[in-house]
Structure formats: C-alpha cells, structure tokens
Image (cartoon, rainbow, N blue to C red; front, side, top):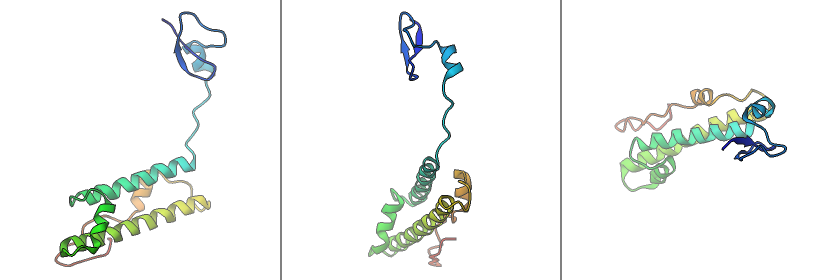
Length: 138
C-alpha cells in the first residue's frame, strides 16, 4: 500500500491518496524546516549531561549516584565519610560552576555553549588521595 503524509505531517498508509495529503516527494518539498533547539532545550541537555558525569564519577567508587555518595558524608565509617564529604564538595562546585555558565547565557553575557564546552569548564573530578585527606576539587 502506498504511504502519504497528512497535512500535519503524519505518515500514513492509504490505498489511494486522500484529498489534502502529500506523496513523500511532495512532503519533502513543502515540509517546514526543523526548529533549532531553544536555549531551554540546550540547558536541559547540558544539565542531564552534568548529572550523568557526576553519577558516573560516584560509580567509580561503587556508589549508585553522586546523591547516594553524598549521603555518606555523615557516616561513622571514616572512609565513607571522607568520600561522602568529597562527593558533596565535588557536586556543589560542579553545579555552582554550571549554573554560573547558564546564568551568563540567560543574561546575555555569553552565547549558549555546547555540552562539550560546558564540560571543559567544569572542575576535574578525581578522588583525592585518602592518605593525604585532600578534600578540595582539583
């Protein structure tokens, strides 16, 4: 059976072309161009990528997420407490940096960067040496 596009762009199967419908070639010639993503769309993508980056980092120490790791900041186990506090600090510094970037975009100070550009501006995520008890995000 032939395929046709409805006036709203739905791809449908009909035995014959209904009035107001378009063949694939006709639709390609008249379809509206795709809309570029909005700043809100891009910010949502950036925020999701940042959250995934933080969660991936926490998972290198067997935590399920950065939020889960952060709950260990008050643990009675010294290693868990140390890692939990570092997770809190890394999360806070990462999000503060990210929101500063996004606020600059919203206020027109800079254009919306790509995800890769934002990631390059975020603090490095490296677990500190436990014997040194370094607690700052590098």
